[in-house]
Length: 98
Image (spheres, rainbow, N blue to C red):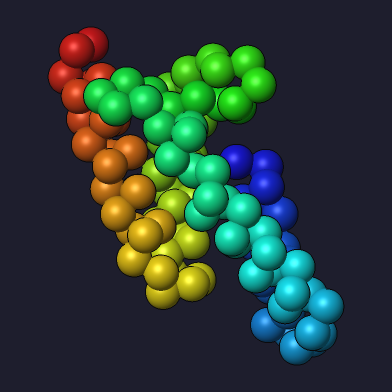
């Protein structure tokens, strides 16, 4: 989630400055998230906070959902919306089990 928060800053910086190096960094960062986000998902469970420790976290799971919807808004890439919806489905399952 920290990397996605950093993406927001790079995105804002690029929007204001149109700096090409910021654009390249933004595109590479978004590509990295796209490549790895599926590894954070645990079907019908809360997502991992980080891949190194593989610890699920309810609070961060909800943050991940919002971040993925925001990445969809920023990029227009439906993959992020689809992943946000899958994470949301997982959240609904976990909430029903409470």
